[in-house]
Amino acid sequence: MLHDALRSSSRTRSTQSHRKASFHAERAGPVSTPPIGYNLGAMGKAREKPLVIIVGRPNTGKSTLFNRLIGRRLAIVDELPGVTRDLIAGECEWNGAHFDVIDTGGIGKESEDPLQELVAARTWETVADCDLIIFVTDARAGISEGELEFRRVLMRLGKPVILAVNKVDHITHEAAAAEFYGLGIEPTVLISAISGRRVDELCDAMKASVDWQRFPDAITVAPPKRKRRGKVREEEAAPSTEEEAQPSIVVIVMGKQNVGKSSLVNALLAEDKILVSELPGTTRDAISAAFEYEGRRFELTDTAGMQKLSRMDDVDYYSFTRADRAARMGEVCLLVLDAERGVEEMDKRVAKRIEDYGRGVVIALNKWDLFEDSEATRAAMTEHVFGELTKLTFAPLVFVSALEATGLGELMEAIVSAHANFQRKVNPQALREVIDEETTIYPPPVVKNRNLEFHAVRQARSAPPTFVFDINDEKLLRQAYRNFLENTLRRHFELTGTHIRLRFREVKRGKKTRKRKK
Image 1: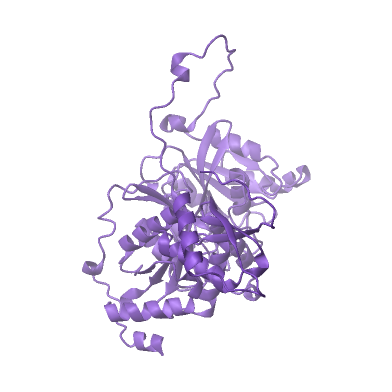
Image 2 (image 1 turned 135 degrees about the vertical axis):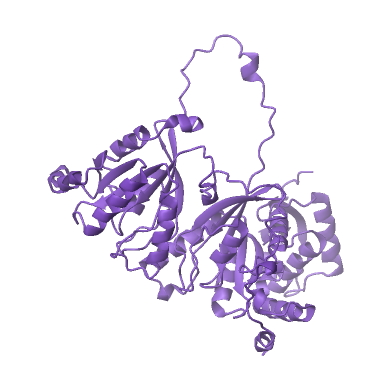
């Protein structure tokens, strides 16, 4: 078998520092931290907004509170303890005050997560650099020994702490929750994250606990309303001379479980933002981070590894829906494959889903450091990949190693190219000339003594490039000729790395087609 032959040339991973690539050293500028998600690489540096960390033992409602504060369902919420693993970030605004809020994994023996120790270590690292801590407890469960120890550690940090006693859904529950005042943490707020009860008081406490002199740009005050009289003053009417910032390229990292998606994201970010382990399904939430490469800004989203729907539990399904939503909002899907395992059935399912999204596509063949990097090996692996993923032969294939950070520069170039082609607008005249010439030289087959006729063609939109053909009868169009038209467009125009859409509009005889815009 081809894959067995390739594996015969595999070699042991090298851990020597001289094997590391110079990808990050070759960046044109410093790594930036734009306000897309929240790049944890900014921790320890000057921040424009206060950083608020939500902590507590498992299953106290931290993720529910986090979603309530940021105003959307970003973190997965489930009754199973230890669902949250990675650090989930969002922005909260309250009465003109802006915060960066981070949801953390639960700390304590209640967690059923086998990665609990790794989750706890990442949580404490984040807490050490925050500006405000929200300590969430469960009013129904009472004070545990773990929370008493938690309280002692938090107090030693010397940072502002707010105690949020959660699950106080009604005023009648407040008496039972009164024991939490004995922890001696001020302020203490009795809340219900799921219903929003008294969350406004918590937000008031957050605003009052921050030294806003350190964050002057994070406070906005609405200007007083003034009556307009006469003409607008010149300084108000003058347009801004600053150029608008170039929008970020939104990249969604997809693949089956355990192919190294999170490791690849960490390699691109030059930081261990995403939790990595050998345990399948380590990543559950869709984690976003932003960085800059050669003057371009990128928003990178790591998604949970896909698996069969029949094998999913509730948490897996929530992970799947978040990955699905992220991919539909992205621009370039980065499909990560495991070079050691080759293309398997689940890889094909992920590729089919990417095809349904109609995004730009780049294929990253990870763990390439296990193989001898030669032209023959690359050619054999390329033939194997595209022989299995026949619908993605237009996508660039990049050989990378997340462990040794090799191939990352080539990967970024492929992403930039795929994004440009995803947004491409073809010259209308050139489009018509190409289709007229190709359909004349290679006419469609005759079906029941009838010929398929093309009246007009135009590009309806980009992202992805979508082309509309006006024809006489859609029943005369065969799939093979559809493929011919798509291959013709790809051959004459630069559309590598992006899906394209072909639409066919039936125009009956005697009915005039709409005029084409010149």
